[in-house]
Length: 255
Image 1 (cartoon, one colour):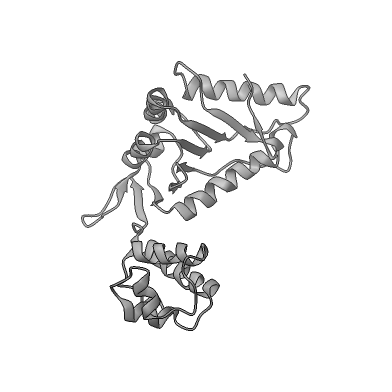
Image 2 (spheres, one colour):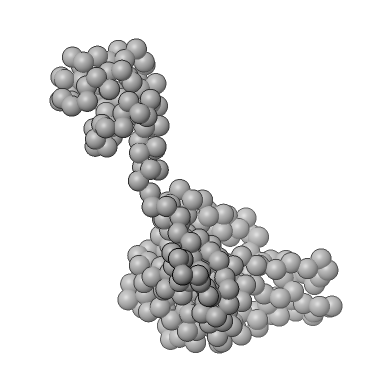
């Protein structure tokens, strides 16, 4: 099916799909119907793929063809690396990729990280992007669970977030929205960590890495990651984090 339609222009597939959905084009489809709708190229392929199907089935055929075409057009995953490399390496540098992601953000950045030691140097390009344009920026950060009894668990967590902001986001203006695991307020064991390291930009690009948001991890360690320019995956990852907010499983820092 996809092979039959592989040479049909993307715009033609989209136009036909919309025509079936809006009932502008009726079935059963044939060459005469395609010609009357202004389709003059790849008639044999279209007729072969759509003839004898209902309008709903034709729409499904075109949806599959469009999805396969768009999937094939997406850039391949890119290896992202920190540290020494062999002579034939084609990996991209972690700090370069992260800076480019921050600088390219137009609407939204979701960032999750475990360690931000000396993170101001790493996060400065994101602060600059926030200053230059309106960005919805959400940070999901690790806050260490208290050991033993804490009289004011919420105050304990708030102090840790304030320390994070002082050390890793010492910039003027409104900071990102900060979230932390609600289990932080319950002293362990069991112990838990927000150990993920990832960035989602505009729901279109996703970066996952072993590297923390520290100078050491970005420039000196051996770290491996992947950059995916895949809106389907990036949107899924963004929804996963936002779902924690909606379910009340993470707490937003206030003030």
